[in-house]
Amino acid sequence: MLEVRNLTKVFDLSESAFGGARAGKVRAVEDVSLDIQPGETLGLVGESGSGKSTLGRLILRLIEPTAGTIRFDGNDLLSASGGELRRIRHDMQIIFQDPFGSLDPRFRVEDVIAEPLVIHESLSRDVRRPRVAELLRAVGMDDSAMPRYPHEFSGGQRQRIGIARALALRPKFIVADEPVSALDVSVGAQIVNLLQQLQREFGLTYLFISHSMPVVRYLATRIAVMYRGKIVEIGSTEQITSEPRDEYTRKLLAATPEMAVS
Image (cartoon, rainbow, N blue to C red):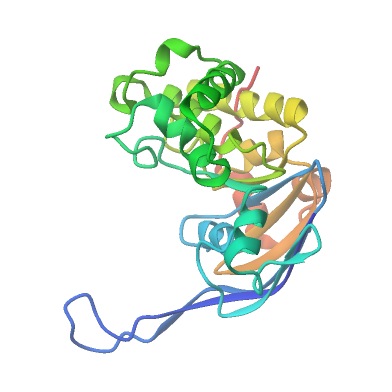
C-alpha cells in the first residue's frame, strides 16, 4: 500500500527566533525507506525528537520533503496536485497526539466529525447526521454527544471523537501520531484496544507512532525503530522485541515498563 524511498527532510533554521544569528540546518528525517502492506500495523518507535512525527506528516504530505519518493496505492504522492492529491488524501487520514488541540473548540462535535464529509463529499446536513451518529457509535459513544463542544468531554472521549473524524471518509490508511501519549495509562489502553477493533471492522492499515515500545509491541505487526532521523532497525514485532540487533533498540526495550491492556 505504501512505499517510501530515501525520504529526507531538512529544516532551514537560517534565522534565530529573535531574527538574529544564523542557526544552520536540521536534518529531521534522513534517507528513510520503508513499506507498509495492506491491513498491517507498522509501529514507528523512538524517543522524543527522533523525527517520528515529522516522518508521519511527510508521508501524508502535510510537510513537503526535501528529497525522496512516496507511493500510495501505486500513486506518486509527491507529483500529485490539485484534484488528484485531494482524491488520494480521501484514503489517508491522521489521528493527532493532542485530543483537545486537534479539535476546533468553536465547533460542535457533529460539525467536527462531519467536516471531512463537507470538504471531500459535499454532503448535506441531513445526509451527514446519520453518518456522524454511526461513527460515534463505532468509537464507543452515542449521538447525544453531537450537539456538545469538545471542552465538555474527557481526554479519552476527545480522542474517540478525533478517531471518529479520521474514519469519516472510510480511509484505507491512518497515521496514528502518538494517540495515547497524552492520556493516562488505563484510558490509553482503552484507545489502543479501540484501534485494534476498528482495524478489524474497517480493514484499516496503520502507521502507529509512539515513544513507548510496550504499546507498539502490543499493537504492531512490524516495528521500525527511529533514532536521530534515521531508521536504525526494522523487522517483525517478535524479532525486534526478542532479538534486537541495534543497541538503541535494546535501550528502548529496557527503558519502559509493560503496558497492561485487556
